[in-house]
Amino acid sequence: MQKKIAITIDENLLAEIDYLVEQKIYPNRSQAIAANLEANRNFLRRQRFEIECAKLEPKEEQEFAEWGGFDDWMEEY
Image 1: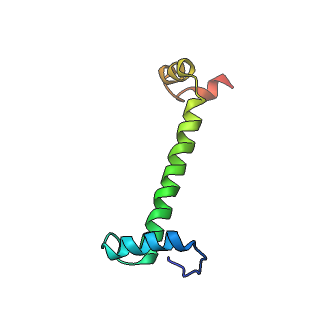
Image 2: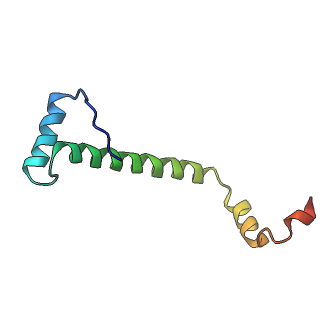
Image 3: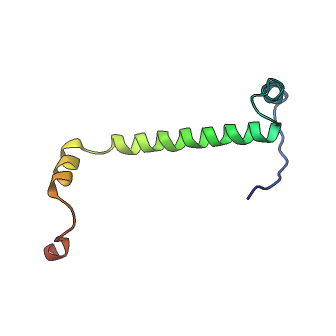
């Protein structure tokens, strides 16, 4: 569901958005802004994922993968 909002935006940025619309890259300002917000959100999610992956220890992860799963995990507790 889409919601209508009002924003205040730098005039230079608005000029860039208008240029993209004029060049038919986006059909209108709203879609240009929404597409760029979505791209930024995806970038930030990917960046966060990479940060979290960097915290993993490859040797521990390999041992866990080779462990085989949770078939008998209840027996251990």
